[in-house]
Image (cartoon, rainbow, N blue to C red; front, side):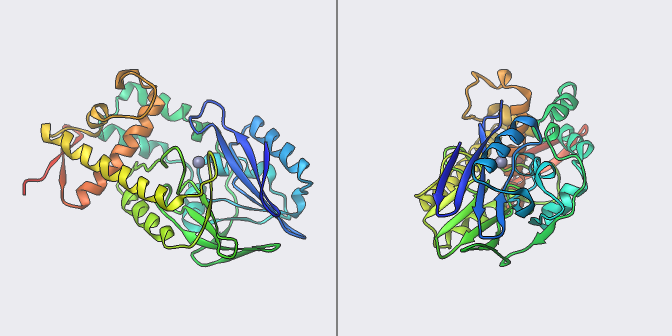
Length: 324
Ligand SMILES: [Zn+2]
């Protein structure tokens, strides 16, 4: 499916089978000499076929095409090696380029998950069957790294890079001030909330995400091009909603911890989740993984705010409210 969004700017829908995201939006900006493709899809055949069909319809020659990747997740970056030629530039933030090239630290994720009460018997299978792992780009790659304020020109479009860490370390949006367009990647989505996860003690992604939301809300745009689902027009309201959503999550966890100290997996089991399964026990394990990653991001935030504390008992991390 191809849609022209504004002159020379198109969306190709790349299917993500069996994912609740349903599809990835790849944006194609046709300039005179060069074309820019923004985000690509998973490294799997049906994504490649959809991309090839779209680019052929648009008359795009891959030898004249460069790529901008909003962040390193496999649904955005996975297909890049199958598309780029030796005449292509591939742009990504430094933080995500480094993370991508150091490989997925499965053992570290597993250790952190174990520490947080994730059941041992399901852990390895969960990680290996994760779509982001199965459909990732499998080789190291050279990128041209971009930072805040850098400019990408394609035809009449002049995009400014806006660093928006949170959904990933180096997530980056593109802002076109003259056309008042924000290419948002997974920083702002419409009917689903971007997944903010934590699987190490290295950073506070929720804090980063909330300040990245404040940052883009200060820009003047009218159209948001998200990485998944439909385009957004009333984005300031959506930004407020996303901030409220996380505030409510923080309050829910605080309420749950009034029952006493517990680990992240036990907290996740007591939270309300906006998905189709009847109960936590019937969640597929892959969904539990996303859910616990979210819980951990919120716990880290509450910990840094001094609202909760953590201690380790029998190799499991237990969170509890701090006494004030
Ligand atoms: Zn995505």
